[in-house]
Amino acid sequence: MAKTLTFALMDPPFENGRSTTALRLIDIAVNRGYNVNVFAYEGAVYLPFAKQAQHPNVVHGRNAEEENHPLPRAWIAALMKEAASKGPKIDWINCGLCVDERGAGEAIEGVRRGSPADFWTFAQNSDNTLVIGTK
Amino acid sequence: MAKYLLIESRDPFENNIVARQYDLAMNLVKEGNQVTLFLVQNGVLPARPGNLSSLLTDTAKAGVEVLADDFSLRERGIAAGKLAEGVKAAPLSIVIDQLADGRKAIWH
Image 1 (cartoon, helix red, strand yellow):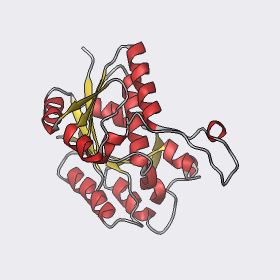
Image 2 (image 1 turned 180 degrees about the vertical axis):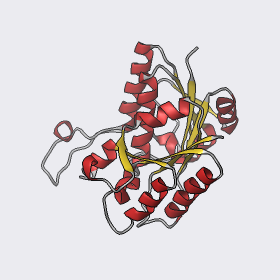
Image 3 (image 1 turned 120 degrees about the horizontal axis):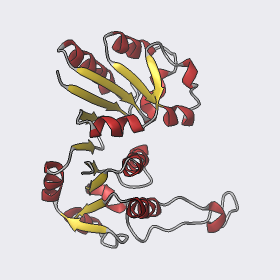
């Protein structure tokens, strides 16, 4: 039976390397064949926000396509696609209270709404849990 | 004997708690535990030989396995072959392997 790892994320996108490191860890776990649970709390609920959009860079004279600004929602979608093709499951829950506070209800496909109780359930049913806090 | 994984993402130049995390790693070893201190992001900065590198060297000499994320090193232009004494470059996959192995993990 495949192992399951749970990650709790708290950082919003575009602000800190922790988000990138977390997604790198999830990618490695999926490639190891492990199931991954993610509980996105506070600003992290914006990581899979569906309305993230690329933009031009007028300072460098590049349009949006040339700028090709990376979007966390695209990375997460790619991770979910990768997992689906290889077998492991990524179960991503956004904290519903955090979503409502921030108006971040429009998440990409595959993201569920939940509560901190889901994080407890995740941890109880996982082989290990890593909390990546903001402080 | 328990096994611990301490992940350090900050550097001691910006955050005073970092040195306490190194102390925690050493004290866990003194208590008979097996400890890996994994440096990532700016946590790898003191792995470049400098005035605070001795903190990591002392940690390694105390019996802590001190590893530095090779990707974070490359991002910061720190040569993996010229790290402070006691620090080794390692892939991030070590973290996943140790989590899967059931290590008690703390992120800072």
